[in-house]
Image (cartoon, rainbow, N blue to C red; front, side, top):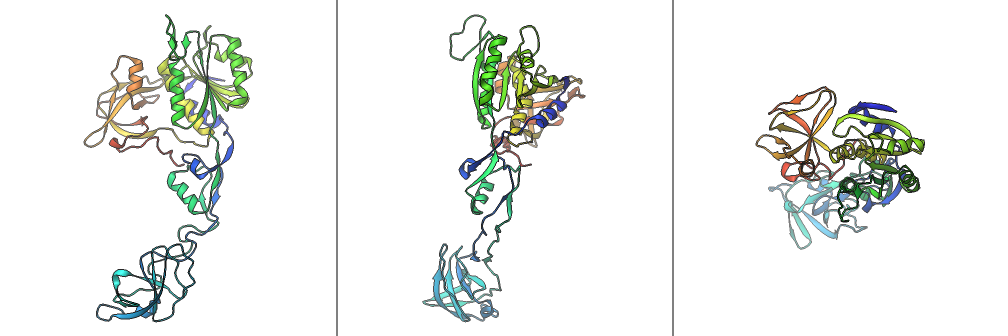
Length: 419
């Protein structure tokens, strides 16, 4: 197991080490945000027939070769065809059939003349414009051809793409499953929210926040509070093992006498990948595989717990459902004041963003309370390893954490990014 590695290496090891959570077949109304586990081909042509792009008249184009306002040509209207019909109507020279948008083109017609280019009197239209072959006709298969690949393996399924699947005759497709996650908070001092708070105790806010992020990203989870006991931690993990695809523990990750998680996992013969990462906050994070299931050991301090989850555990869980891109949108923003880090590690700084005159402005958090700072941030400033500071006025890339920011013109989480 690697120890005290750089953040970028830890992220790469996480994403490359996790297995996918399997696949399943889901109906169209459950596909949003899922990722296709295979290429998907269309079952049908769309449209299924040559159809009209306009309300007007299906005509023989050669009849109107010389039509103009100075040379009006009359055609006999012999019928009507509407969208959704399977009319057997046909026309020949000198005739026209009234047609609506989306209706099938009658046999013998090779163009559609828009209504604004003719006048109708009973069963005769007087035409004063040409309609060359193919005018206003949408050919069969013009949108989708039967057998055409319309969604590729590993492609994120957006609402618009799901609409395309429906047009292609699909009612369900196979996608990567979302992993079921066990979230285990450890510590004699940790109690469930809402219980009476005795002196020296604290509420399991880390667990609550983690579960809230999991809900936002569509993951299901199971939670449990466990005291600082090797036996109880081990039995809880063993109990959860058959029911989940991944584990997240909160607390006990550093490795001191009271920090038991790594020791328990070693007794269970896990395959440790790394422990401790050069990142701040969050350096005590550990990661490995227990019976091929990802196991994230997060530190107990709230800022460290949160950052280890957002930067390493969350990308790992998303990779399990086939998603290999960063979970948060990166945008350029202008710093309102200088920020400093440590060139020996990657530093994450809480921030707030707002729309400026010529760019998004980012304000580093000034709150003294670490919990208030965590709660009020909507972005993170990332100072990479090897860089000591960013200066006031500098335009930098930031991570945007808010689910939706229409006022800023950015939409970070609503749509998972395509590969």
